[in-house]
Amino acid sequence: MVHLFKNNGYNIVLDVNSSAVHVVDDVVYDVLDEMNRGADKEELEKKLAGNYSADEIREAEEECDELKEQGMLFTEDIYRDAVDQYQNRPTVVKALCLHIAHDCNLACRYCFAGEGEYHGRRALMSYETGKEALDFLVKNSGNRRNLEVDFFGGEPTLNWEVVEELVRYGRSIEKKYNKNFRFTLTTNGILLNDEIMEFCNREMGNVVLSLDGRKEVHDYMRPLRGGQGSYDRIVSKFQKFADSRNQEKYYVRGTFTHHNLDFAKDVLHMADLGFRQISIEPVVAPPTEDYAIREEDLPTIMEQYDILAAEMVKRAKEGRGFNFFHFMIDLTGGPCVYKRLSGCGSGTEYLAVTPWGDLYPCHQFVGTEDFCLGNVRDGILRPDICAEFKKCGVYSRKDCSECFSRFFCSGGCAANSYNFTGQINDVYKIGCAMQKKRVECALMIKAALADGK
Image (cartoon, rainbow, N blue to C red; front, side):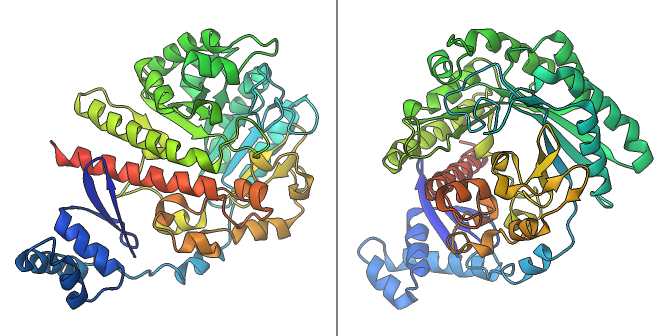
């Protein structure tokens, strides 16, 4: 399978099964386009004769044939059958999302967690429950040494003392069980102070800082409980925090909605504030919400991704580049291909834990009782649900199995699929469209920066 597209002046060809990327001239692009449609050489030569000379067409054909022989064009899919063996292997739990606080000091308009309540009740996780969660993770992690724990909410700093105690407990058992904990934190920054920053810089492998971009955008969507804006309360602290981490191992992470479809301006605003690790993701909300992304928004969103990608190339060549999470594609390393094809691991390798210790497939399923898997004391009580999540992957979704971005996307989010289709193993089509565009922009950036011009 070959995917061809044009972006910011580049003709780009992706050979899907080998992940080989080619930047080509117009004649090679058009020849490959005809080949991709199934045309034989006689047909494509006849069709392209009005645009190119016979020698140009033949030379392009020879280049394409050579790349095919080298395994860089029209390669076969060798993973479709083998992925079943990967998915049928025994799995272990390697990561927990600890809902350390089902409470929040903000009232974000788009919050899927209902201002931290997750459709349930406000609660703070006790040290005892958190300790049981870490013990559960160690017990169910098999021979895996590196384990991940994300302190999540609501707002985790509302329960900061327990966060510190759990990190200390985790460190105290690492040597005994031959484990290494990588702790992370997601925070809105309202309670952030020097003490918390110092602790995080010592103990947290990554920190996610919630910021939606421009002041007017952020304040509208992320107000305090009293309705006041929160932008001025957090930005300077986030800047200090990012600098204290040498502009590494953190993200400022925002959400764009129907109300700020010009979100490229928000990304660039954050870059202008000095942040170098940035993520802004589309809101996922039912169409009844006024801020929800709609199908008719997609042309504007695609244009914004193109604008952002072009500006990122420009800034990188000027020596003031930054990373945008959704444009970060690793063509040479990253997760093994089988892991990429099997998805994020929700419900199997990755679980969420409520303040009272219940287990869910991920943070977005918390509060949906049909997906409660068990608890940290008794373990997994619904292995049948885990088995269904284990089946999720690229080749179990028809749309994904035929998609050019499958090796980069991993089939999308099971929670989004469930919320929009009622099935965990389907696709959220608006999300799919945006993901495909992000992959194209990411490949264009790679091509432009390799170009050297």
